[in-house]
Structures are given as C-alpha cells and as structure tokens.
Length: 128
Image 1 (tube, rainbow, N blue to C red):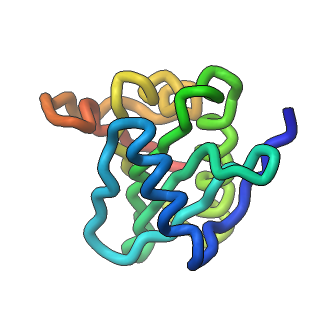
Image 2: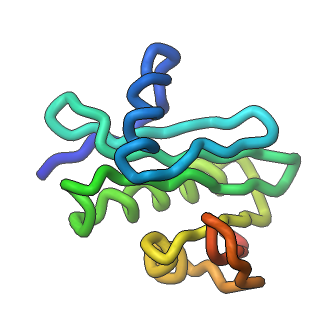
Image 3: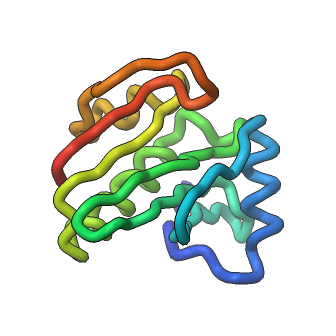
C-alpha cells in the first residue's frame, strides 16, 4: 500500500468534508488551518489539520476513512505534521485526540495534559 502525504489543495474542500463525514466527525477550527491529506489510489483517505500561533501549534482533525484504518495512515499524517512543525521552528504542539487516535499521539511522544468529556476526548501536548 503506497500512501501519498501532501498538502491539501484548494479544490479538495469537498473531499475533506467527506472524510470528516465518513468518520462521523466535524471540522472544527479557530484560526487559519493548514491541511495535509493522505491519498491512496488517487482517492483522499485521510486528513490532518493544524493551526500555528507563533512558536506553538495545535493539531486537530486527524481523520482516516474507516476502510483504511489500522494500516498506519494516521501515523503517517501525524509524523508529516510533526516534521513540518519542526522545520518551521514550532516549539510546542497541542492536540485533541479521540479514543481512536489517542494511541497514535501517545506513540509519537505526546503526553496527556487533561481529559474531558467532549467529542475530542483528551488534550495532549508535546515538544517536537
């Protein structure tokens, strides 16, 4: 399975909405988001967004369509986001994880900073 990870293109907004819908999630952002996507066989199968604020960033909306979950796509998206943030000098990264994505964030080095009962579940933090 070869998955391409790249920046989302302006014409792919509907595709991002379809991924969110397939994962029964919502696109939630304050600020100007930057999205990357995972593409498999020409089809969008995953996405991750982030918002930067100076030397910090918040990763949100790490979604993978159900039929390719468990194949490492979420981890690829997260690693690509973290590599990008390190290149641009971000020193602190926050994320909101669901029960489904929590293990991916913890494996990448995030630590729990707080748990709460909402659609996002757990707030996480790390220094890249």
